[in-house]
Length: 291
Length: 246
Image (cartoon, rainbow over all chains, first blue to last red; front, side, top):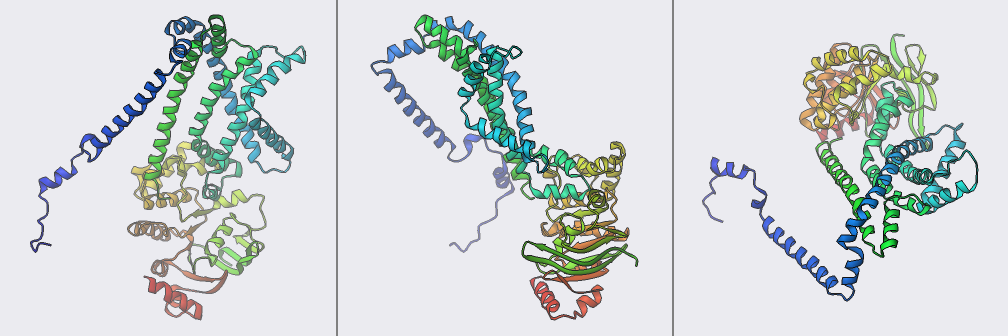
């Protein structure tokens, strides 16, 4: 310890401390970047090297990633994919509506409505547990098989119906979790102002509950988009089915890769959007962490 | 009888625990009553029962001539006459300040939105918060949030205001701004019941100080006699403990 006291920083030095730093000026950033780059090159390079020098690589590349086949398959797979989008666009609003309705029924406490509540619980348990593929096949093959004249026989209709049934069971539980996450004190506050139970739910609890589960709801959208591919098992010419047809006519699987890329391209923006929402709400939590 | 609120032989239990026993209390109109006592003595419960957020097991609570405990059919209408402010503010985080304040006037009293908003702005103006009208609660300090919560309760023009430890969650430098509002409300003749740990504030503002001990009223009186010459040994002990803590 020197006996001379350290002089305080000059104004210029303080100003320098307060200067916003470029991100590469932050200590350690360059080092982390270099390490990340190196490890990426080593791992991915190693994997690529391993795979490409394997005995069957040429055959696999030819079968799955053949560019001419991809080009040839594109028109029909793209056309099929439009049916996926259509099924999804029809199903999603229904899933949200029915899911919310089921959640509301399940949350209710009225004793008169007990039978309805029991039904809702049974529905949710049943269709959350049953694999979507089986529900699609049972409806797609079973319902037309009943030969009831006024029932539609269109497999697209039954495919959408099956997707709606399974997804809404999941979505109901998501909504329920959101509604139950709203703190009791919010209810107290609303009731103390004279709002009825119903008004409290409608204006205070429900909006907050839904907001809390927007990210998992979007995850649900993504699952539903992919679930529409399963409808191929009952016949409609959607992307997967078209890819399958191409593949069996040409003995090449590249058409499947085209379908996969289309699904991925559709879901990535939604995934990034969810990340952004989560990040934003995390920031808000930090700022408003008082209450 | 000129009491605005009257508690008669009120008992309240949570399961096997008796939290309020034999509460008999008169709250005169335009008076400020401070409830004091150790944590868990029943202060908050008494307020929550007054606002029908909790049910009592025995006894009556009269608001003028109406027995609050008996007539649960129109509980919502009664609640609207009794304002309540909570320790943790409980603003609605998904609504801005104006929406927070106007929700109940519009939905419960059926006021026109524009009228309700005008009145809300008047209130905000009076308490120096007009510039926060369009902010969301998470952008406000604790003191600002609590002042908005008080304004939200006032917007329903309640006959009595219940304040449940409204300064306990605040940083020390924000306690004053909330106390100032309460002092101003007293000057406007608002009837208030206030659970508090701030003895200094209680002695300054209260017309009647009520000491609750294990769910019962042990002692009450004007602050000068209550703080100057407490009658009960337990009251003395409590006051010593809290003044030592300060």
